[in-house]
Each structure stands twice: as C-alpha cells, then as structure tokens.
Length: 379
Image (cartoon, one colour):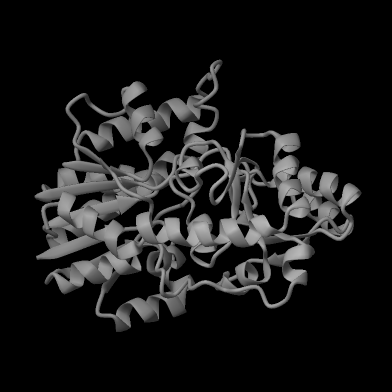
C-alpha cells in the first residue's frame, strides 16, 4: 500500500501533517510526499527522509495563476502517480487539492481524498451579502468543483466551509464529506506555561501570530493596539509573522510604520512559536475566516485565553465568555473592548487560560483528530 500526500509548502508538512503521516506509516503504508521546493528546505527534507518517507519534488507555484505553470503541475503529478502507483492520495491547500485530485482521477488512483484547510483569497468576501466573484474566483470555484467531483471524500476543518461549498454548488449533492476539528495540536508538545510573576497578568501582553495578510486581521490588530495603548500605555503587543507572496499581503511600508510607532514588538518569522506564546498573556486572532486556526490551538494548549472573530473556523475555538471572547469581523472597537476586559480584570487571564487548555484537551487533541480522519477513510 502506498499513500501519496500532496503539499504546497515543505515547511508545513511536519508541523501540520506530521502526526497523520506517522499514523499512516504505522498502518503499513509506504508514504510518499510530493511538494515543490524541497531543495530550498533542506532541513525539512532531511527530517522527512530520516523518518522513512519518500519525497518527490514537483513544479508548483503556490500563489501564481499562470495557466501554463499550473498545467505543468497537473502533468507532473499525473506522471508521478503513474510511476509510483499509489493506492491512496490526499492533497491539502488549494493547488494540491485541485491538481492532485484531477491527476489522481486521470491516473485511476483507487482512493482519492481532499482536505480543505482554509479558503483564503479564492473565497474572500464570500460571507458578505453583496458578494460578487472576481474572474479569478470564478475560475478557482469551477476548478474546485471539477476536482472535488473526482474525490471519494472531502474533509473540512469547520462546518461553515462545508456549508458554503454546498450552498455555492461547488460540491455535488451526493458528495461524501467529513468535518474534523482542524489539524489538531500535540497537547504534550504544547504544554501549559504558567505565568512567571504577577506582572505577567497585571501588565497584559497580547500576541498575534499570522502571515501578514489583510484577511488575517493584522490591520484591525494594529488599530486596536493603538486604541488600547492610548488608554493603557503599559499594555504590550507582540506580532509574529512575515509578509507572504499573496495578493492580500500588507505592504512592507505599512509594517514599518507600525513598528516605528512602537505599536508592536515585532518578532518576525519564527520556526518555533512556543517562546512567543509563553511570553504572552492573551492570544488574539482577528481573522476574517480560517479552516481551524492552528496558532489559536497552540495558544490554548499552553493555557492562554483567546480573542478571535465570530467567523468560520475561528468561532470553533472559543466559547464566548468561557475561554475568551468572540468579536465581529473587522470590528476594531469591539476588539479593543475585549482586550480591555482583560486589562481591568486580570483574573480572567488565569481563569480563561485554564478553560482554553481544558477545551483543547477535549476537542482538539491531534491524535483524536487524525484517528477520526483515518476512520472516515476506512483505514
């Protein structure tokens, strides 16, 4: 038995799919992983090879829309599947899902799966009443529809994304789907980090970890930080992330202006986010939409309360008033008000942080999430 995993970014494989791939290997599968740019990520490639996985470098532009390049991706995946003859295939993120599913159908792979981890730019604005698709979005939705029709099961990380795909008729009426609790989190690796001193609570330290995109709510975080710091100068704000090659990415000049205003302590991109979470007291993600946000789960596992949006994926992680607060999308005033609640009542940080850990243990343990996926695959 051979299981082919198709990814778009080598650095994401171990972090987001490492436990799932290990479970597949333990079930007797020869695991193959296809992704672009393994040569540019030698440490990740070495780690995966040492675990016994077989790697395949494929041509794929993660964010480009060049039809010729995408045709090369489809062709390369088809030829790879004809060569290695996998019994099972699963792609995650947009291009691996679309071109991996189409190639698997053409190559007559017996068991074909897709994992929708988030909708991103292709569905930006889809929740708004006056939503009008751009030409690019129309093309992407059609490609999704054709590709998913060739799969045996589609996994979603929240019920809202599944409902949207059905409402927009991207999924066929009889399509088999399963909703899982995100990618899960290793609750032993992300252990509770107690606060070192009373100042860690009395002087609140907010944290956002994200690719620096508009739809991650980075601008709202900056505006709320300014509002809070004007009223509570002692409050601190951390930002971890990087400017991605994405149509929705913020400009370097905008980031520089926030740093020059001293709104944030900017950490840049981190391979290990645990030190940043440990240094924080409240985790904030004002995203417009997620699959299920991994950074929120990591912060919850480490005992931090959460402020996030009442948006698909995000709302799955917070019981409002129990382990944090939900605020409307793009609502800077409400976001700042939620931050202020922790400043005026710091005991909430301890209370809700404990609730976050309990919730993540009950719902988001990575082994339980992956076991549910394997059972849904019939494995």
